[in-house]
Length: 71
Image 1 (cartoon, rainbow, N blue to C red):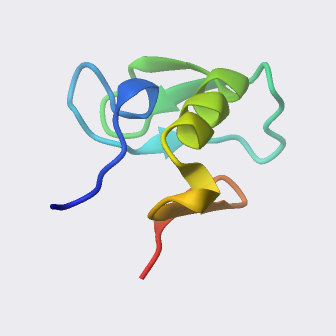
Image 2: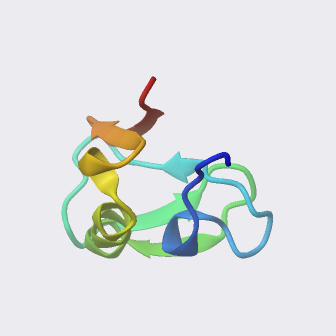
């Protein structure tokens, strides 16, 4: 079964996980979908959702705001 992230990380408009991050992202930074521009939430909300879905203990990890599939 293929693992994938969803919930707040997946855009409700285009169903992609492409996040636009600023260089100096903070917990209150607004995050938008890079594909269609839809507002996804604050960085704190998305980061919380990432870790709730397994985050670094699951099949994905995060480095400098990039979500990477573990091998």
